[in-house]
Length: 305
Ligand code: GH3
Ligand code: MG
Ligand code: MG
Ligand code: MG
Ligand code: MG
Image 1 (cartoon, rainbow, N blue to C red):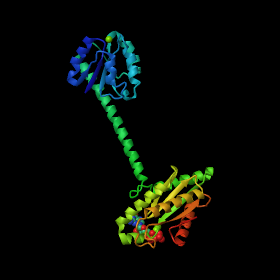
Image 2: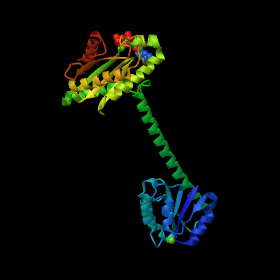
Image 3: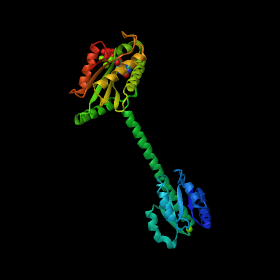
Image 4: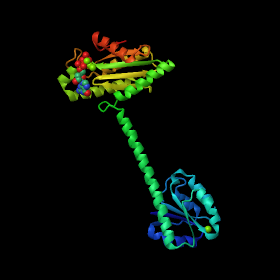
C-alpha cells in the first residue's frame, strides 16, 4: 500500500509515518512540490492508495490543495483523509464538499488512524478496480460487436452488417433523395474452382477477391460485404450509375492484374460478374440481382445494369 502524508509540521509527519509504516510504504515529502510529484499533477500518473492531508497549512491551505487535487481526473477516486485539530471541525463541511473521504483529529489514536487509513485505501482500490473492470467490459463488448458484423473468412462486413446498412441507406435515399447504388458481385464458375483446386484453395481465392473488392471501394461511405457463399455486395452511398461503373471497372481490372489461376475457367483466371442497380429502381436488391443474372447470361466477366 502507498500512503502520502501532507503536513507542514515535520514532527507530525514523523509521528504519522511511524504509526502508518506497518501498513505499507509511507511518503512524507517536506513540501508541496514533492506531494504534487507523487500525485502526478503533471504526469497524470499516480500509484498512491490514500492521502493524509493536513487541513491547516501556512503555504497553501489543505482545503485549497484538496480542490486542486480533485481537479485532476486521474485522482478522482483517490481517498483523502483530512487531518484536523479538534477546533477546526466546523471546516469539515467544506472539506467533505471539496471531496474529502474521511477525517481524523489530532492527536489520533494509533489504532484509529491505522483503521481509517486502511479503510480509505481499500475504498480507492475498490473504485479503481471497478473502473478497470468497466473499461475491460466495454472493450470486450466493442470487440464482440465488431465480430458480430464481420465475415470470419474475408474480414469484410457480413450479411448482418450489410442488411443493416442496406435498410439504413434505403431509408435515407427515400427521405433525402440521396442516390445509393448496389453492385452484386458473383464469382464465375467458382464451383469448378473448388472442384479442381479444392475447397481450401477456394477459401483463399475468396479472401483475395474480397481484398480487391475492398480496395475498389474508395469512399469511406462505401460498404463492401460478403453477401453469402461466393457472392459479394458493394453498397455505394451518394453514388450514381456512372460512379458505380467506375468501381465495377476497377474490380475487373484489378482481377485481371491479379491473374489468379483458375484451370476450369475458359479464360484460365478468376473473374467475376457484376450487376448494378441504383435507388431509382423500385427494389434495389432485386434489380441488382436481375442485372447480375444478365451479366452471367451475356458470358460472365462483365457488368450489367
Ligand atoms: P456461376 O459462374 O454461374 O456463378 O457458377 P458458379 O460455379 O460460381 O456458381 P454456383 O452457384 O453453381 O457455385 C457456387 C460455388 O461457390 C459452390 C460453392 O461450393 C462455392 N462456395 C460458396 N461458398 C464458399 C466458401 O465459403 N468457400 C469455398 N471454397 N467455396 C464456396
Ligand atoms: Mg498544519
Ligand atoms: Mg450460381
Ligand atoms: Mg458464381
Ligand atoms: Mg453464386
